[in-house]
Image (cartoon, rainbow, N blue to C red; front, side, top):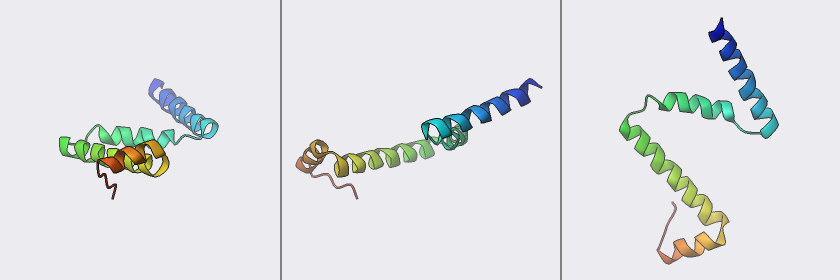
Length: 77
């Protein structure tokens, strides 16, 4: 019974957080659960992908970082 109660309260909590804060908590939680079984290569690939996305965002949206990255010849593509 506790397992079912915990599952339901977790799902309701995540749903409320999604709707109140406009987060996609359930999606992040699902990905977290899947990622616990990833190999080292999968983890490194994901990390590289996220760093590239972050650098691209910074380059496109923050003048300071765009100037810095231009100085070192950064190409986000």
